[in-house]
Image (cartoon, rainbow, N blue to C red; front, side):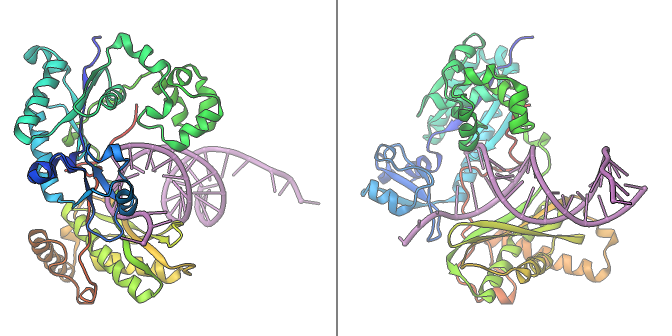
Length: 409
DNA sequence: TCTGGGGTCCTAGGACCC
DNA sequence: TCTGGGGTCCTAGGACCC
């Protein structure tokens, strides 16, 4: 069996680069894209800002301290989404096997396209040239026999990189590579592995799967394979991706709240956002989860199962409120979240009572107006007292459609 | 002005049933 | 007074990704 040729494409400083393209004055400047709310963080830093130490996840204060000349730009989600869609369309010129991994990352299986275009490297060069010509954007490309290694390869050269890992090079590349470099091994797992004396992928690949399984459960066996660079997971195009399993929204409040009435109004806002998206997907769900983060950042959640699946904002709101009513709040609340899960995709229109159907139709019309004119153009009366819109910032992890599928099968 | 927001998957314990 | 077990559903938390 000939090895697959998998490509991972990572747009370099995607949001910041787009802003620099649309605002020439920002070109060559240290730029950071941030959310619109007050308690936001750095979403993306341009390559001019990175040498100062400005990084994703930083607070604005910290970033400004490190780089006083930093230009802050509020994220323009619609623009990023549109450009992402056009870039994915460009990828489809080279293969139908495109997996959108996030708004700025994709996997391409080009194994079937080599005869047409010559080689994977050639395809990468063509894509890079087109991204530069059409969008003025750079990317880092990794080419390898599987997704795990392609992703690793694309990380190796930034910005504007093109890195190949041929099957014969895999063992040498991994031997001394720190385990934390692999997608799927985060800080906690890295720390636990290090306690076992495992620091490099080479060591991980030689470790006993049985011992790791006893410590890590199912992923233990996978970890050894990852250390060996083995990953048979396919590139999954959007139409084959599994259905979304949960729909939720959360928001960090402008200031910490103690008043239950105020908290309830934000819950209504979140329930409305969740309900509207659920209805747009055509789903309803039986489980509603309320998440609370206290001022000290400790976070917990409580859930409630409904007798029937729901998608109406009001029902979601009432469930969230019932959960809140049972809680004794120990501290001021910093963040609120509402999530709908155990989703069902059947819309059982025929089973509805006439009254319920009328209400659904009304909600549908409300959704349509909101979709066209933006969040909260129309809303329940009790929401009118809430100042400001939902910030609705998307992160680079946002995807145009479908859901993420990390993992090594 | 310390620390966003959207997801998936796994685990562990308890309730409950046969 | 003894201390089975398998299965499912539910809950809460934590690790991971961008």
